[in-house]
Amino acid sequence: EPSLYAVKAIIILDNDGERLFAKYYDDTYPSVKEQRAFEKNIFSKTHRSDSEIALLEGLTVVYKSSIDLYCYVIGSAHQNELMLTAVLNCLFDSLSQMLRKNVERRALLDNMEGLFLAVDEIVDGGVILESDPQQVVHRVLQSAKEQIKWSLLRW
Image 1 (cartoon, one colour):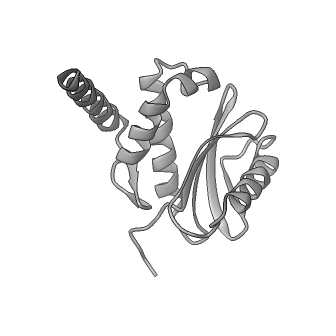
Image 2 (cartoon, rainbow, N blue to C red):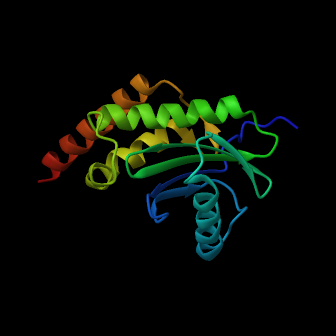
């Protein structure tokens, strides 16, 4: 049955399979222990593969790697892979613009607030809101400007 809730999770792992970022939008994996086990399983199945899509544990997983990062967008088994890929590409391209094409672990860790804002602009509660990286970057910059303005007013 069609649903607006297309995304079950967005995960970013480093090249050792350790979590850098994870946001789950449903209770498929309710505990942190189950989430970590799922992430290890995804990483072990995908880190040596050249493909960009996998079916794993009844879920559709689309992914992309860059230098020392692995970005994953997860949906249900019957979810449209093109929609999940659009989310993945939007996230990756947004990060690339925000990090000045330096999409790697250190740069990401130094700019986690931008990552959080970008993910929130792209997906909300599992519903895809935006797939245009230019719009996402613009909104992230606007949010950052607002935060700076309010922090200066409070100071």
